[in-house]
Length: 396
Image 1: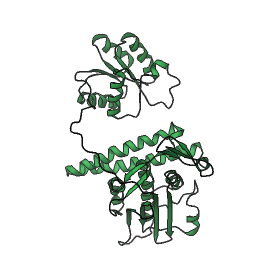
Image 2: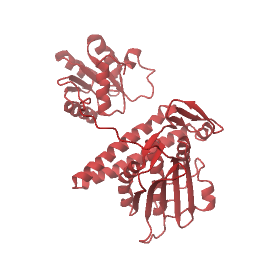
Image 3: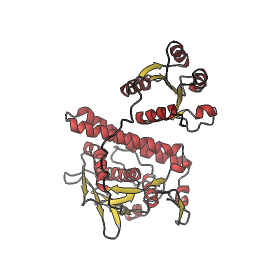
Image 4: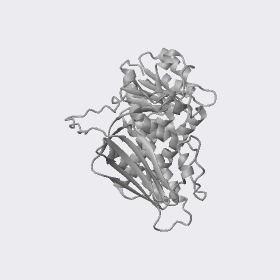
């Protein structure tokens, strides 16, 4: 069931496995601050992805390149989900909890952030004690821990005239007999004074030291939001620090139940391919997107044609048939895709016509077009599933 925190911190029921941060905490962050939250987290994710791109580009180890590419994919997916806070207020502080294998979270964080730490001459040590489980939202846990590790990196970089024996961040996952589990991030950086520690949860108060120009002063949002998310997962975020010696931050969560892996299926269908020979028309004015869609859909079994404008698309459909059309909503300064969608729906009623859009709302679109949407950003798997659902007569 969904658990929503009211202004007094008491829980009320809502859909299963979901909860949201308390309304009085959320009110501490205004609309502009909530947008800043999304920007802050997306920047963290994309920065880590860029470091992984560098690893993939430079390494000659195939396994290491595969790991880097997997990390890039995960961080882009996470950044995409974070952008949802800009368009869906109900999702801004929502968590969906399940039992998590903590070692998997630690491994993901190490792959995500170790290249960034090493680039700054800082060691990131990741450890798991046994095979602990926690109950929480995996994406939100990674979001919180990413913020804690990057805070720790700032603190280490801010050490004046750092000696070789300084510059270590540890991430440890463990469970306790009292029914709790915790992720602990420890650094040997500059630490915080008692006065700073007393204000660490204030929205807008930054605990990021200036690391000799290596980083701009922080927004002061990360810690307050991280604590909101921890509490929304029925946990807490705790910080202990000694000025000049370092900081320890603990994300405490309820223990999770033992998870047994599902038995592998004897047969696995290929539900990620299009019917062989499916004729697809892609209409997008952005060359890179257009070319990527042509290549990717072709690899999924389709025969793909492409156009950069409504007029070019009309010329193509005038001389060759198509089964599916993917049309971008904006096709240059004045050309729009929605009228073309309606035109093709009228001319080719048996075809599947979808409008690709990243607009935050669709109130400006005709109802028949709203029923034919492929929301940006989307993965190719999502595009394929949307196409197949539309061809089966299901609403998109």
